[in-house]
Length: 289
Image 1: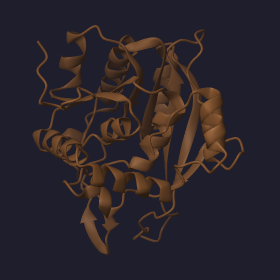
Image 2: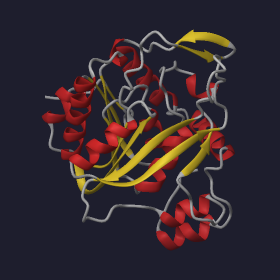
Image 3: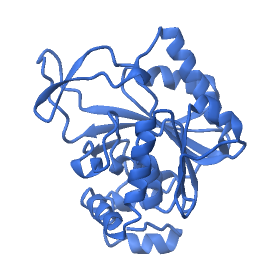
């Protein structure tokens, strides 16, 4: 039986301590959307630049990879399990860099997913390249794919257009990396910004939909889901990160903190302009901001 490490009082947020390979086969529930930020397997003693300091980029044992074949099999296994947990019209979003994203794209095709877009997240505040021997890394990628090539997926086109000043939203998203306000309960070394997850969730789900994150980390997916009135199940095998997840979800029980987060997201252009009200009424879309 699956036991939650923490479940919010409204039952809209559940975090499970465990390995997704062990947890996912234990239930038959299917989700409307999955977001996955799998290990990039880059913890090999390299260095980077953060807050004006040179730092080691080793994330932990969970990010230390094996052979190319073992990494490929790791990705094939979790992608197979996730496909089984998606509704027929469900979609999956997977973040990565050039180190892993192309291999994952090939696996998605192999496993009969249909790739819809490859989003380029262009960071507006990337860390500098300290070696000065190549271009500064300023982008990550997010693949969006649906489970079935023939079953239509959810896409809130009018909402995305309204957010984008009435223009079709492109597959290049200019958003900042995480800010200090997102680290109030502690920081995951590969934490994604709320702005990124909020856009993903608003684009491809409806209110009260269920979202799964098999590599939940500090549960940015869950916080964004709950702020957008969606429901969340996260799986995370590192105890410090499930503790941060619980603290972050408990934090937004305070209305003033939840509201402050929404104002921050508004500053990042996540509240559409006045034209959205009409769109919301017309298309039944609701944003809680």
